[in-house]
Length: 243
Image 1 (cartoon, rainbow, N blue to C red):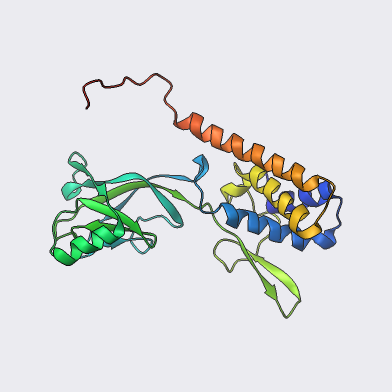
Image 2 (image 1 turned 180 degrees about the vertical axis):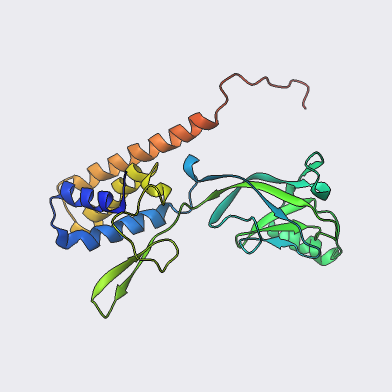
């Protein structure tokens, strides 16, 4: 199983560096994950999630029950199960947030939502939901988990943390905990190696360029796999009547 230790020790070994450079490599790994945290790959697609509308509440984010953590993008348009009836669905239409605010200003009343927007990591609805309870269903990309580090002045070393920001990283942390160390392992390792060669060692022997090439190949393979998984296995008929 690929782990945090597998990744940083692999980069050290390939670079011919000693354990004295481990913290430098670890920072590069965290920086590589942060660099990719806002992107969507097949392995950070979330299955449809559901939140329940509340009378007078127009915004729904992580504070709402059922809303995933770390959402970076809503995929497509959400559905509204009218009256929580899964046979009575309405596809919300997307509009810009400034437009939605203008509509709210001119029509502050409550009704069944028909439009949505994405703002400040929240789904914004218009009109504002009324007392009739609806299920809001959507799919999204969500970050697998972003690591972090900070300099410890007491010990004069960098401390590394798991996505909750408080739990210390361990060598065993890996694929079972975070998709960046599973499907995304090769891409993150290659980009971290590139950062290590280019921004830490400042090597001039082509190793940075080789690591960048390996990164582009790994990323391309992930994107190609995502396209292959989402592409229909048959030719879709095209409507000729305009509908």
